[in-house]
Structures are given as structure tokens and as C-alpha cells.
Length: 582
Image (cartoon, rainbow, N blue to C red):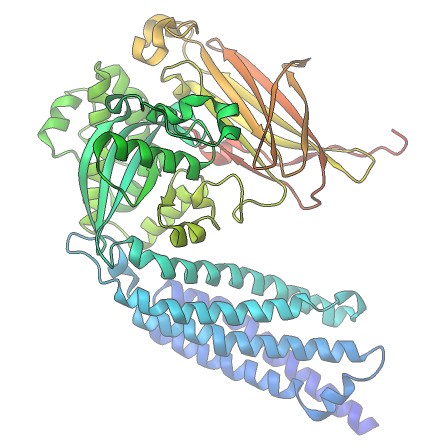
């Protein structure tokens, strides 16, 4: 018995030592991959596999396996065996194929360029990434099935840590496999793809960001970008008859959804807005498009941060810009130029849209020329996507099914939406460009109910920071001059809040006073909306309370991306204290 105990102790020390060594190598492997250092990654994964294989061998020793059958303590031995087996599977079937993919791919060559991109290596990498993702997914499921409550703390603690690491790796590999599966085709590997590009103007806010004033067709052929038709939503005119939109959304956002391109994104559901925009475009122009992309000036700034300043070489753009607007745009001045200065310096709305589209084309031309740092560019695009400033919709169902799993889809329902997700969206009611001056914060307040249901208050505070004399100091095109019933310089906003599935919106309070509100449902999510009007310098706080929340996960919040950084808009969760007996 003493010999058996000593043997098991030696095996336990060996397993622990090898797993700890393997764990310490994971950050190094990540760094090697991110640096695109193939030789270092191969060396690291080789040592990693040695440690995980040794741990697995020790954990499958006959005596160790027999110890797993012992009552009470046996579960701990079995759990350690599962951890060692999962670690080795991840190293052999996950990390090793991933490094092989790194060996075959030069990520820099996958970025758009004037010469195009060889997308075959990325397409060839898709099966390996899918296989690696499958291995990690299986290992993650295996560890998640273990009941940690019956384990010793010395075993349960590293098991929980291993679960967390695997979950993070699982998510990343699933994403990589999905992207590799559809990206080559979407980038024109099997023939040119044409996308309708909506350039959203955050100065006139819409639920998905801003009014899609400037429109262009972006063609992608083997990674080579080129611009085709360009126009404005205004020039496109009204759709007669209106595009059919589901009655549920028309009940919330009116028939304007399907009538005007400017209003296609009154709904926060980008797949609805994009498919509507596609139908409008094709009916008006006769040009077919394979999908819809959306971008805003803030995300253009993120791209400029990566590729560097862009000179406006087009003589027409320089003529429109005159002597007051910059002829060199960078990440520091593009947002202010496009969302404020343009309206002060360019009087004609049609020329404003031409300038918008022209600037976007110049930026994409520089992007195609291969300027800038690839890593920074990927980080900038990822940041824009995370903030909802860069959205994608494909008319091909197989591709859209993959896109819908991620926030870049802009969906308000489906796999990309967390169980306890709240959404706060804004639609301009001024008919002007005053939202450049509106500063907002949004916060979730988790309230005590004393029963099994949750209750959360959504608090939205808005301030009109326009100058006191905005009615006379700002151009009429910016203020609308009272044309739509809103006093010049004031801002009217429709504030819309979404709760999680099956919840109910109960009450609305504006500046401390209970008020009437419009209550709806969209995709089984409760929707409450309130309209506010802010004079220059005025602040207003709207509070919408959602009750009967059945989800027990922590709530998260999605908001309309505005001129402000999203991190300044979304405040941390506030939780009220439960007082017994009250």
C-alpha cells in the first residue's frame, strides 16, 4: 500500500509539473503566432506537445486508472486524467494544426492591394482551422461536464482555470475557422463581389449609427478593391411602392423603413436595414449587389490611424473642399471634418454627399495600395466592428448564417445576441445634423425585486452641447431651421430601448416624472420608446424599467454608435442593494 501511495504521489507530481510547464508555454505560443515568428512557434509547440504527452501518459498509468475507481476520492483521479487528456488533445489536434496554418499563411499578403490577393492559402487553411476548433470544442465540452463540487480544492481550482482557458481558445478558433470558411469567396476568390457601401453619418443619428447619406458600390475581385457607382440617398428618391418590411418593425418604425434609403436603418436590426437597402438600390439603379457594408466616419478614423494620412488628390474633392477644409485627412481630424466642418463650409447638401463618398474612396484607395501596418489595420477594423461601426450583410444565406453569429452582423436577435442583452438606440427627429452636439450616457441599473424575476432600469442621459445661439450661429442645414417643427438649435430624439427575450417594459420616467411611452415587441424582445426635445445646454434623463426578466446571466448592453467613443457612452452596471423586509 505504501508503494502504491508513493507511486501515485510521484505520478501526481509528474502530471502537475508537466501541466504547469505546458500552461506557461501557452502565452509564449500566442506571442510567437502574433509576431508571425514561424520558427519560434514550431519550437514552442514542440515542447508543449512533449509536456502534454508526458502528462497524459502519467494520467493513464494502470494504477492511476485503478485509483479512479476508488469511492469518494476516485473522482479526483478521473478529473485529473480528463484534464491531462484534454491538454494533450488541444496541443496535438489544436495547437499543432494552428501552427501549420501559420506556416502556410503570410497574413500581410491577405490584406487588400492594387495587385489583388492570393486567397487560395486561406481557403486551404479552412479545413485545418475547422479541425483544430473541433478538437478544442470537444475538450472544452469534456471538462465542462465534470462536477467540480465533488472534487478536492487542489483538483477543482486548476480544472476551473483550464475550463476558462479552453473557452477563450474555443471562441477564437471557432471565429478563425468561420472566417476562413467564407472570407475567400466574399473577397472575390471565385469571381468579383459587389457590395453596396452605406456611409453612415452620425451627425444625424439612426439606430445603427447614422443616416446613410452617401452610397457607393465597392467591388472586390481577389482582394482588389475598386469603386463603382456613387450617389446619395437623397438622389435615389422614394421607393414606390415601398419595400415590404415585416409588420412588427413597421409598427415600431413606420412605413418610412421601406420608403426612403435615409430611413432604412431606423430599425437597429442591420440585416433588415441592409436587405431593404439592397432592394431599394437594385430597383432604382438596376445594379445587383451581393451584400451590404456599412461604415461611419469614426471607423474611417480607425483605418486612417493604421494606414496614415490620406491626401485628397481628386481635383473635384479639392474644389469642393475649398480653402477651409483640410486636404490631408488623418485619424485625428476626419471625424470632425466629416460630421461638423463640412456643413459649415459646403452649402449644397448634394456636394456634401459627394465629398463624403469621395473621402471614403480616397481612404479605400490608400488601403488597396497596401499602406500602413497590417496588425494595426486589423485592430482598427476589429475595434470598429466591436463598437457596431462596421457592419456586414451577405445576400448569400450560407455566408449570412455565419455572419449572424457575430456582432458584426448588427442583428437584434439570434446567436450573436447574449441571453440578457439590452439595447439602446437613437433616431433623429429633427431632420438635421445636430447630433454632433449631443452627448449621451447609458447605464443599466439592476434592481432588487425579492422574487425569482429580475428587474433592470435602463437610464439614458442626453445633453445638447450646441452653443446657446445655435439657431443663428450654425448653418440652417445643420439646425433644419425649424422646418420639421423642432426649434432651430434644439434636438429631437426618439430613444428606443430593447430588453431581453420574454421580459416586459413596465414604466418610463423622464426627468423624474412618470410619462407615457410606446410599448412594442420585436423578435420576442420588449421595446419601449420615448421622444425627447433638448434646447441648447439642456440635459434630460430617460429611465425605462424592464421587469419579469427570466435570464440569470449578467446583463450586457449594446448602443447606437455615435460621435462619442462607445466607452464614454456605456457606463458600468449599477446594482441596488436588497434590504430584507423591504
